[in-house]
Length: 462
Ligand code: SF4
Picture 1 (cartoon, helix red, strand yellow):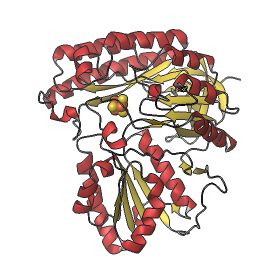
Picture 2: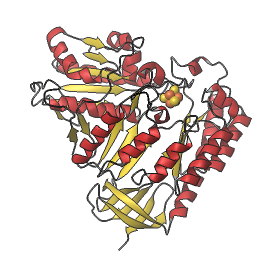
Picture 3: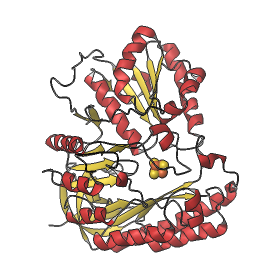
Picture 4: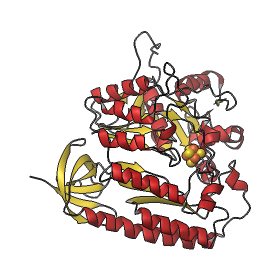
């Protein structure tokens, strides 16, 4: 069941009459957690206006596409999908189609040009305006509203209702945008410079979530380690480590996670805050991207492989039992066989529990898209297969190491394959299947009885 959180304060925000009672909305989300969380906010705003969700395009009065530009073919896919929606619009002219997110931010003119049946194009910082934009369409016709990257007066997500996917787990945005310039990444262009939410706003949202039954929060930002650098709290800048400790003091929060840290900005104070704050899980997603210093420099990542491994080691020594995952890009322009061998070596040394591995795909608008020394596709594929094989072996070995151990798990819900088995997660984010029907959100200790390549099996400790 979806859950609604609203931070509206009577007298602070004007309460709008519900005007779309009985209408149904369908949201399709592409891309990252930031987009998924934006979709939750869009759903919250629509439901506050009286709408209910539907799982099918055919039943919808409103279709929202929350888009992503992460891959080279993302735009092709978007226009293909928009093409498939044309017949729905022709059959039902009162159907509204809205396109938001990163592609909308970047392709603003092109969307109306190539898909004139789209009613609303809205940018990455215009999600809060969705209901007003629907009103505008009813009265005036198609509309485009995109924040101006040259004047970054960003609307932070405080105060927006949120329609959550889970009753016990929620995302909490702590920063939007990014001040880095990784050459493969479109985020600084489509999401703008980094802006931090004030710690009090973050804490207030977490408290509200807990009062509604949330037990696990994931703090979200493109680079959480630079949180607070843009704030001034009576002459002091709040640090991410301070924020972790403060969130950990909210009564009722059982698990705190965060994503993503940036290796160049990760410092010991955050590892200490993790170790000293009971609710902060022993888990980190630490994106390596490449094991070659030459490639890391071309990516503008701001660290070397050695420095990366030192920081990982520092974290593991301070946070016992830390589970670590990473991202790796294979075939970045100019990556030689030797560079790739460095990546394999670092992956072997790091022994990540899990890795998200990608083949380089140029995103138009990024510096890497214009780099000339592209690696041939068959070479990228061959390297990618080797990396996946190496990491699959490490992941399985790491899973085998857990057998016989006892871990606290939190129930996510019934397993997709077997409703008589629950899918649960350890604090290290490992999936553990446990026989029986268990209420989502409850926690209990299990002993791990079996390891598979990508999951564990456990039984409750009696
Ligand atoms: S840190 Fe780099 S990869 Fe991450 S959002 Fe910023 S520019 Fe993109």
